[in-house]
Length: 436
Image 1 (tube, rainbow, N blue to C red):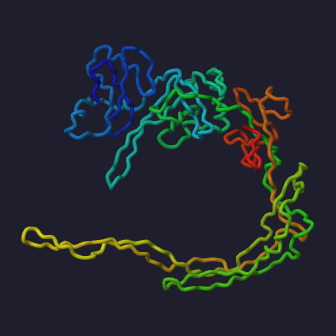
Image 2: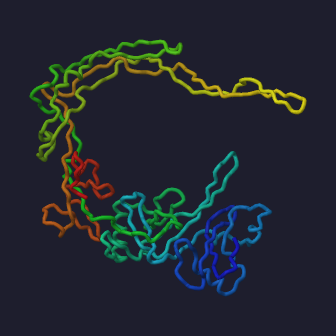
Image 3: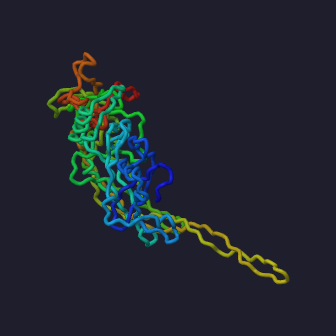
């Protein structure tokens, strides 16, 4: 790339490569002395332009260009690759870096600068190596944070934002740049973080440290533990425990001159429990905490395969082929020429295949007589607010730096929150939620 004739500066994108030089450039007005915008690099290079240096050599070219490409002739060979290795890019105060991969849990912060590291990927395309040179997403340290804005628009100091990010790193809610595989990895920098956007996508749009109020759905730990229990039932349970052996009958039918097999089954012992109550309210007999739960029927019988059968099935395959369908005559002057005519023929080919399926089962009942196997249903949790915002007895724990979690003995239903449990929910079956 060539510096333009006007008062704009062309700046270098630093990229590491053992193969050559990097090619990328941007420009801005070098005379106004303004801070570099997201799409620009290296404000320090303005000195070269301002001092009248005619060829500041501000771009890198990584791949060879064709001999007839005149743009490639303007590059000057450098002694080493240092200037193409990395760049530290200053950013304007209102630029937003969004940290985190989950769209619902991203954290927006303001940073003063970010580092970009180069990488090279060599891909095989039609047996030829294809070189791709790129740049990592913006990488920054906690010391680069200059502040943030909370969900309600109130400003947050840089110290609190740094502590907020550090707590989320310690709790595993954010991933340090050193733990990211691939081109964005920064070895040995455990406190380095990555912006989710690339340099060219950094913007000044709505930048929030927290997207909404920190209310959480909290559930007692005992209520969200999975459980299956044998509970007594007044009626509907099977009068026998087994074991029962049930054998299937294998038959084959001809289709497309091939064998299509199937196994027919007589009624299984599971039919004897179809009158079990659909819901039972009971305490968990194996839990120390005594709460009433709703229970629904589970799988009452355990089935064990005693033998397999080779079952035939037919696999279909769509095919096509260009075939000659006739001849067309074309007259040129006094001479006639015959031209073959083709069409595409489509058909389906069928193949005989086989698979193994069980043809004999032994059934044993899981629970004793007059009992049924039931699965615990998880009760709704409680929408819990931060201290001082309600008079409720149950309130979130304040960990400092705008960080909260459910109290001891409780787990959270907010995905991405600390102590998250997928069984904890504050949304009823009719879709009504107590936590917005």
